[in-house]
Length: 173
Image 1 (cartoon, rainbow, N blue to C red):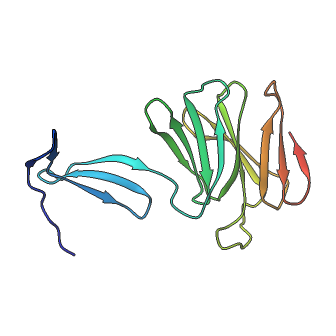
Image 2: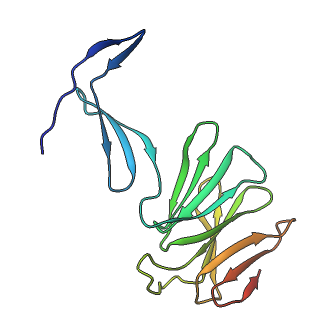
Image 3: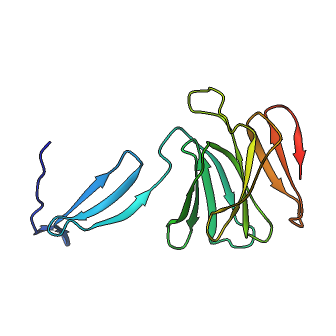
């Protein structure tokens, strides 16, 4: 493959001016886009997203409308900032994530795990994790089902939660 260096130029197009800067955009297999300065090689992450299979879960923070979370087959949970229009933080889990639910106070995120992009059983099918939203570290993990967790919800007070599983059962904690 060849590498081309961008040259600095100004092109006049109508009444607008466009600057071509000495920068290169690079997209990775992990769905990240970096802007790389040609002269220094300094790289800045400018965009990223889920990169394997499908995005399965989307949940808004009930205590902070500034944040929402997504998750999916790539086994990541991502918390996004609405005003900054970018990823705020990300956690890599060890299984695909099928559902998310925020605790009413917005401090905890519940993720239901299971499945595999190939359709095969996954060792973590039926597992759930409770994540600390500030750090996305796992606070607790549990498993009573051996099938995908398909839906999750907290009680209005946040002192209990329920999980719906592919085994056609509802688990209440």
